Length: 464
Image 1 (spheres, helix red, strand yellow):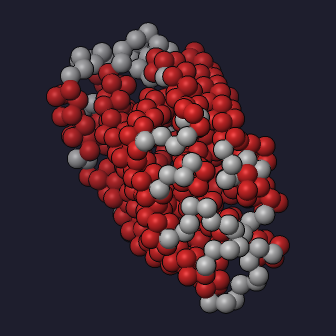
Image 2 (cartoon, rainbow, N blue to C red):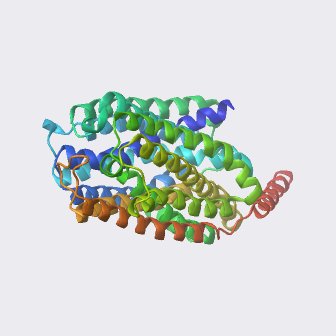
Image 3 (tube, rainbow, N blue to C red):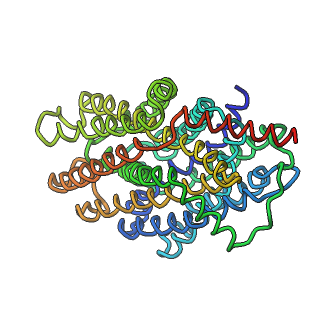
C-alpha cells in the first residue's frame, strides 16, 4: 500500500499540468489577456506536437540511463525544479500582458518537455515493479487517483481562492497565485515520489544498454511503435485523447456560458469530479476482472458519450429546466458524474493495456522498452490532446463568441453552434475509440502465458 501511494503521488504533477492546460489556459490567454482563441489553441497544438515528438527520445534516454540509482530516478531528481519555474512564468507573462504567438509557443513547449522528463520515467517504473495483470491495473488506479486529485485540488483553489466566481475567472491577478501554488505542488509530488521509491528502485539495471545515438534511438522507437498491439491501441487512444482534450478545454466555456454556473455551482463542480474518480476506483478492477481491459474500454466509451450528450440533447429539444436554476445545475452535475466516471474507466483501461505490450515486445525482440512505449503513449496523447484543444479554439472562433462575453447575454445561435459542433465531434470520436480499443489483441490469458514463458526462459538461463 505504501508503494502504491508513493508511486501514485508522482502523478499529482501531471494532474496539476492537465488541469491548467486543459481547463484554464485557453480561457486565461483568450478572455483575460485578450489573445485570439484560434491563435492560442494553435500555439498549444504546436507545443503539444513538438513535445510529443521529443517524448520518444526522452523515453529512449530513460531506457538507456545506467546509474546506481537505476534508469528512472535521475530524471525525477533533475527535472521538477526547472519545471516549477517554467510553470510560474506561464501564468505570469512579463508585464502582465499577452505575449506574442512565438512567446506563448516557447514557454508552452518548455513546460511540456520538462513535465515529460518527470512523467515518462515515472510511469515507466510501473512495468518494472510488477508483471501481474491485475496489480498493474491497481497501480494505475492509484496514479489516476493521484493525478485527478492534483488537478481537482487546483480547480477547487481556482474557483474558491485564486479566481472565485464566474467573474473571477476573467480577472488576471488570481492566475499568478494559481501558477505559484501549482509549481510548488508539482515539485513536491515528483521529488517526494522519487524519494519514497528510492530504496526500492535505486540499483544498477541488470543489463547495461548501449550508448545513446539518435539514429539507433529512432530505429528502436520505430520498431517498438510497429508492434501490432501498440498500433491498435494508438488508433483508439488517439480518438479518446482528442475527445478528452476537447471536453476539458471547453468545460469552462460551457459551464459559464451554456449552463450559467454561479459561485456555488463552480465550487460543487470539482467535488463532482472527485466523486467520479472515487467511483472509477471502485468499479474499474471488477470490470477488468469480469470483462477484460479491451471490452471495459469499449463499453465505457459508449456509456460516457450517452451521459455526456444527454443534457445538451434535452436542452436543445426544450425538455430541460431553466438554465442557471438549482434544478438545472443539479441534473447536469448528475449526468456529468456518470459521464466522467466512465470516461476515466476508458482511459485507465487503455493506459493499463500498454504494460502488456512490454512483454509482447520483449518476447519478440529480447529487449525491454517501457520508456519507448509509454513515451509513445504520451506522443499519441499529447498530439491528440493538442488537437482537442485546437478544436475547442476553432469551435469558439467559428461560433463567434465575443472575447468579452457576459454569462446570460450570449445570443442563442452562438450557444447552439457550440453545442452542435461539440456534440457531433464527440460522437464520432467516442465511436472510433470504442471500436479500436475493444479490438486490442492481448487478453489476460495471453499475457499470463507470456509472462510464465519469459520467467521460465530466465530461470533456465540462470541455471545454465
